[in-house]
Each structure stands twice: as C-alpha cells, then as structure tokens.
Length: 211
Image (cartoon, rainbow, N blue to C red; front, side):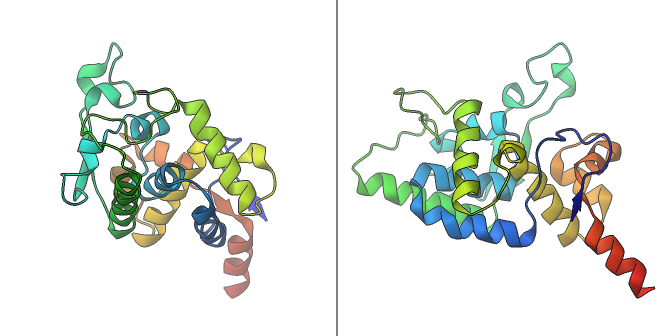
C-alpha cells in the first residue's frame, strides 16, 4: 500500500518503486531510441522535464563517446529566466553507467539510420524538424511506457514520476542521508526534498513489527 506524504509537490504523480522501475525498463525495448533514452536519462539524472528536454546532442556526446557529466545552463533551469535568475546557477550532474549506455545506444541508432548528428541538434527531437519535444509529448511517452509495463492508474504517472523516482534511489543509495539527497536533487532546502519522498506504509508496518 502506498501513502504520499502531505504537501507533496506533485500529489497526482507517483514515484516508481524498485519493482515498478524494473518493469518499466523491461518494457523499453519496444519503444523508439529517443523515447528509451528520454526515460533512462530522466531516471538517472533527476533533471526536471523542461531541463532534460533542453539538452542538445553536443551536451552529452563529444563526437566519440558519451560525456562523463552533463550541464544544464542557468537559462534552462527552473527560475533561470525569471526575476530571481541571478540566484540560479547552472547545474552539472555526472552521468552514471546506465545514462552513458543509453546515450551510446541512442547515437549508434541514429548513425545506423544515416541521421546527421549535429552537436546543436535537440537530443530529443519532435516530428517538427529542428524542434525539441514539448512537455506534453514527453508526458505521453511516460504514459505509454508505464502502460506497456502494466502499471495501473495512468493518471498517476507522468514526467515528474521519473524525477521523484530518482530522488527515491538517491535517498536509498545514500543510506537515507537527506542532505546528500537534497544536493543531488538541486534543492535549496531539505524541506523541499522531504516533500518528494514517499512514505511506504508496508515498510512502516514491517518496521514497527520488527521492534
């Protein structure tokens, strides 16, 4: 049984559990290289959807191999174009093995199709030439993938599901270090990070019974 903490920033979007994420990844081979890479990069960088859709080929591919880290410029970050933009800094995230493998496979697929991979080209292009996917299109990708993975309640999943799933993974990998998780998420406040973390009632029950 799931239970979301109060004041969840996206109450209609659920993070994936470990088993659900495994089902999503298992379903990815039936989708296009672009869609697979979008999901895998989202799950392994934690960037917001607008941030990850801003990526170009040159930001993740040096012409020979995937980059070791990716940087999103201030203008493409949340608040980077607003009245408080001076408080926002560009954000760099190291690319782990899963993210680099996804990029490697995506570029190889494009090359096999004879697609010219220009450094300034959108990493996730829409059907409109030269344009990147929009948030609505990215959300549809997540809906299709979670449906293919057999996850019920499609309205509860979206692009923010992937960011919240990344938050869960970082929190667990850090042995529940909230400050390390805050830094990995790019949050200014721990309170914001706490709102991303789900309370699993089954785990609470098991913990209480184990006392």
